[in-house]
Length: 228
Picture (tube, rainbow, N blue to C red):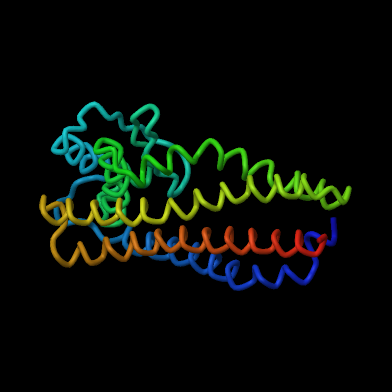
C-alpha cells in the first residue's frame, strides 16, 4: 500500500529513525571501546554474574551462552541468564557491565518488582500486536473497513505500551548493576564511570525504539483520521 508507506506522515518518523540509527551506532562504539579495557579484578562476565546472583540469593538461576553480539538477556520463564560469548568470557569493563545489568533483571524478578511484573504481563499481547497490527490496519485501509483499522491500532497500542513500560525496567536494571559492581568491589571508581557509559548507551537504544513506536502509533492515528 503506497499510501500507507509513502504518504507525508512518513516525515514524522524521520527524527526517531535518525535517533535509532545513532543510538545503535553509539552502543556498538561504546561497547567496543570498553571491551578493550580490562577490569582490575580480572574477572569474566560470567564469573561476576554468578557471584552477583549468589550474593542476592539467586544461586538457582542458570547461566547459558548464546550466539550473537549484545544478545544478552534474562529469561524469567526458565530463570536463565543468557550471555553472549563476548560477554561471558571477556574480562573487560564492558562485559562485566552487561552481565551485571542482566543480573539486575533477575533481581527485579526475584523481588517481584511491579514494573517488571507489568512488563511481563504485557508481553503476550504486545507480541501479538507487533505482528498483527500492521496487516490488520493495512487490510482495513485497503477495504475501507474502519473497525479493522481500529483493531490494528488497539493491538499496536499494546506494543507501544510494552515499549514504554520497558524503559523504567531497563534503567532500574542498570542502576542495580552499577550499585552492585561498586559496593561489591568488582569495579573500581574509574571503571564504574566507564560501566555507566556502556549502560547509558544501551539504554538510549530503548529510548529510540520507544520514540519510533510512539510516532508509528501517531501516524496510524492520523491515517485513521483521514478516513473519518
